[in-house]
Image 1 (cartoon, rainbow, N blue to C red):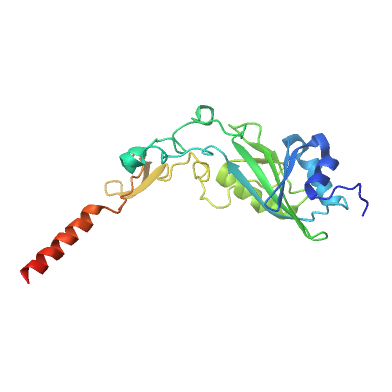
Image 2 (image 1 turned 180 degrees about the horizontal axis):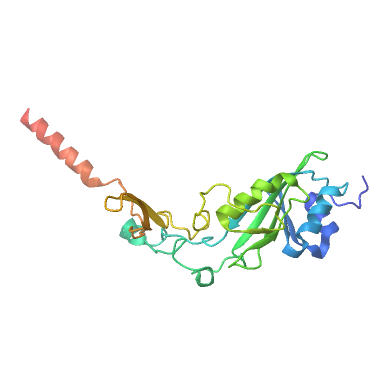
Length: 244
């Protein structure tokens, strides 16, 4: 191999795609290629067909919601000495909108699509990511024409995250039931659900109603070491010894 050729996969990706790629990074032995949505299909075709890459197989396609990235329900740094239950901030996912998030994150867009590729020829793996332009209606071109096996993976991301894959031959829900409202893997989807089911004796049928449970932050009971317990045990031992 010539000494002028890049040594790492990230360097080869940067040299090949240039402005078509946002960044190619290596961390902990894993290579990630960030793309712009408009270059999605062209870059994937090159990754599949060009001899220096030959990523013949798409192992997985998934969605990512960065709504709660860097947010927390708890403040554990400066209130622990006053009692852990006083550290509730109430800034967890579902309590704010993306445009009103309390903390600025390195992610400019809320939704992203991540694809894991495998090169059988070169025995390499690559993670490719692109952010959806519209946070209200995330759209990404479908890869089914290049990798037919991602058909169900894209349907799963559509079902759970609401990401629309443009050009998919049969984009419909795959895990949730018919008529399901919402997308369960979005960070603002309530853990208690949107509707509850009960049997109505008067109507003699099952009815669906809005959830009657108010969401709240659970405060766990924390048992800490306390000298009072040791003192009480010592006093009990002394009393027992005195009685003898």
